[in-house]
Structures are given as structure tokens and as C-alpha cells.
Length: 192
Image (tube, rainbow, N blue to C red; front, side, top):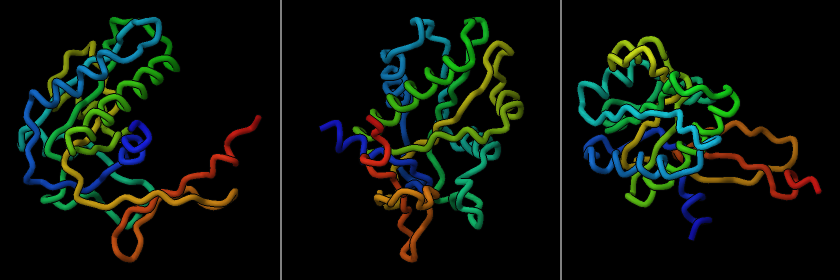
């Protein structure tokens, strides 16, 4: 059921570093993005796939993790993603910036929902040193990195909790290490 899939699709930040993800799986995930809606059907995104330890380490070095967890520098080496998908704008496809970001959201959600069907999870990371990642990946100048989707088998529990109006929406880890994600109540966000 789609509701269960959406509830299980969280921003995972710790992974089972021993579970590899093959290129065919990454291509399947991107195919879901390819088949998804795109503004005016322009299809301005291209995808760099990484699943080798040396490239993964280089990509990892360009990322900033979990801004609300100020005392955490990111996953330990054994808990790092085993694959990445770098979403890039093919700048030869003209699209207004606000519409480009709609495409990024649609494509990212499609990739992550498909990943959950494989027992995988991920995290969309926008805090990326874009110039450095473009250099590391030797991207042609026309491909501008936008976000990175970190992927792997989740190695953490993520729990949704409903909050009252005015409560903090900042995610946190409880005393047992469970990643808690506050969600506003449906009645607080429906305005009609």
C-alpha cells in the first residue's frame, strides 16, 4: 500500500556498510525517475551513479550531514552509504529554476520510494560542495550538480511522531538512538 511505503521512506543517515548495491539496481532506481512527471516534459536531469568504495569516499567528503544534529559529523565509516546518485541539471535544457526544483523533488521521491521496495533507504542531501563534486566526478561543464541521494540498507530506526501546533519540527535522536521525526497534524495543515 502506498501509505506504508511513504511512511517507511524516511531520510536514513546510517547504513549497513557491508550491503553493496549493484549498478543494475541503481539504473532501475533512475528509471523510475525517468518515467516520472517532468515540467513541460523537458526532462532536464541527468544522473551520476556511484557504487565503488573509492568514488563513494570522494563523494562523501563533499557532503554535510543532518543540520539539526549539531553534535554529529555524519555516519561512521561502517555506517556510510554504499551507493550514491548525483542529480545534475543538463544546462543545455532550459528550464526556470523553480520548475527545475520541482523536477528534482519528483525524481528524488521516485528514486527513494523504489529504493524502499528493494529494502534500501536513502537521504537527499542538498548541502553539497557542488564545485568540488563536479571536479571529483569529472562532470562535463554542462552538467551542474544539484543534490546527492545517499543510498544503502538502513541501519537505524526512524520513528514519526505527531506534534502539536507550535512544537519544534526539528528531528533528533532519543536516548536509545532512534531518529525521531516530528510531523505536524493533518488538522493543522489542511486549511479549507
